[in-house]
Figure 1 (cartoon, one colour):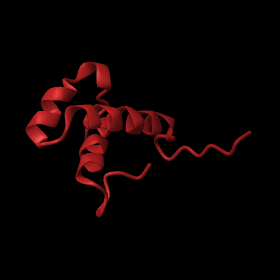
Figure 2 (cartoon, rainbow, N blue to C red; figure 1 turned 90 degrees about the vertical axis):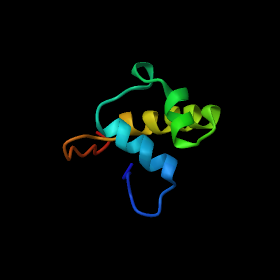
Figure 3 (cartoon, rainbow, N blue to C red; figure 1 turned 135 degrees about the vertical axis):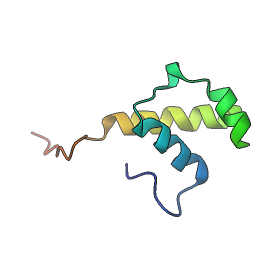
Length: 68
C-alpha cells in the first residue's frame, strides 16, 4: 500500500497518515475523527478497517516478501 499519495481520496490519505504513526483502530475514537473531518462515521470506520488490514500486511523497512 503506497499511501498517502497525490490523487488518492482524502479519506484514504488521512487513514494512511494515521496508520503510519503506528496507531490502531482500538486506540482511536474513529467516530470523533470522522465527525471532525466531515466523513460519515460508518464509512470511515469500514474504510479504516480495510486499510488497516492492508497496511498490516505490507512489509516494513523495505522488506521484500518473495513467497518462499
